[in-house]
Length: 328
Image 1 (cartoon, rainbow, N blue to C red):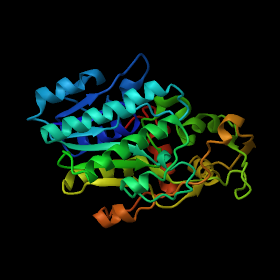
Image 2: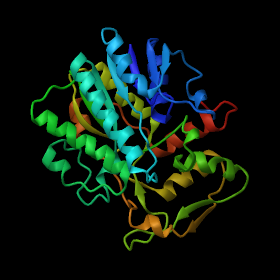
Image 3: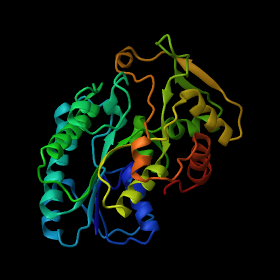
Image 4: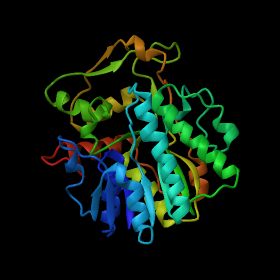
């Protein structure tokens, strides 16, 4: 049995799809579905149970002998969320509780961190898990700080030789895009948000640059297809001796202009791109470049190549967004 927290969310539901695709049936989801269409993220696959997040501790205690692993993807993931108390309850305190439960019951724990923990990138993008290295990072928003706070606590516990899960892995996801992100509103990827408008003949609007080193649309991101993120999780499940904090990105930064152009190419249309001013409130917290260092993940043994931006966008558009049922 595997418990996936946030299993009806974007990355969590893709992990569900990946596990179901290789024959796993004892998959338990911890999430809230609400009144919208989030349930559709689960609809293609068999699940063993669906529990509320507040029931996780009791569920783990009651099912510890049957559980193999906890895959913790549940979080308040909006980088624009300003309720820091809400973020702490969901992203820090629940994560700490799951760490304690996994250590107590001998369960493997794979959890979502974020590339947002690197802040403006001034301290680099090396997935060094030591407490000293993590202390140098300066996240730019409450969401990023909450993820960083948990990474730092894990580092301290591991370095102090405290009780820990038999396998633990924190995954610093970079800019993830792909199917099942449709419930995320403004936090959807550019591809999901712009697909419909582009088909209707509208332009894609990108932020102008307010940094002298970057052209308009030249701001850089490590865009990673969600299916690649799933492959990393499956690899970790297949290699229980691998623990640590790992970047999950392609290792190649690409521009927002590249990302938008790939959408037009996938749709067989000429690029139609406009540039707009970045909101003042965002300018001081904006990351102009992210690029994962993948050396640590590769050295650990993950050998699968990452999907190129063009191939990932094309698959997303043709296999999902372009179909009546776009869910994975």
